[in-house]
Length: 183
Image 1 (cartoon, rainbow, N blue to C red):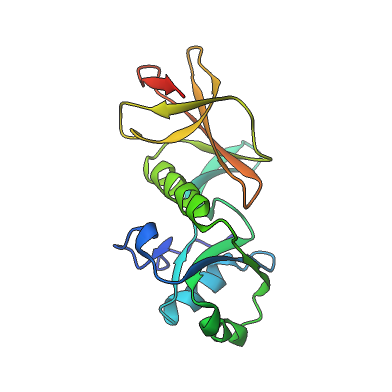
Image 2: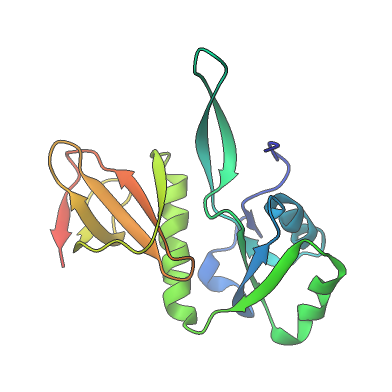
């Protein structure tokens, strides 16, 4: 997987996700074409979000580790565009289909949560499915205001944020001093 330093995870970089114009959609890419699709959308100045995280890869006989920047949800890229302008996308053959998002407000909130988590520099783990647990709100620290599910609250608390559109859950380990409020 090549490192793509010239492609931002979000375009436009300085605009909040909730301020994008048009409806949110998801592109399901062909295998390993997320970066190419992001470059295509960037060149056409189409608003998009591809959550990225630092993924550890072990290689070699001695199990050396390498950290690469990778898409959090492999095979998917979110974009905001009016339905009438979707013809701009048909000049590329790098996606399999366009998925319509019916619950726009809920999807935008989930994307905002994922954006907050990916910026936090926590180690992230992505698991298939939507995990169940006790709903909670983080009330202190850099993730203050984030809603999710508490998985474990022993010495190493785990907090999960589910994205129902992708049927995936992002899990992060919280600092034991982080205050949570059960909701």
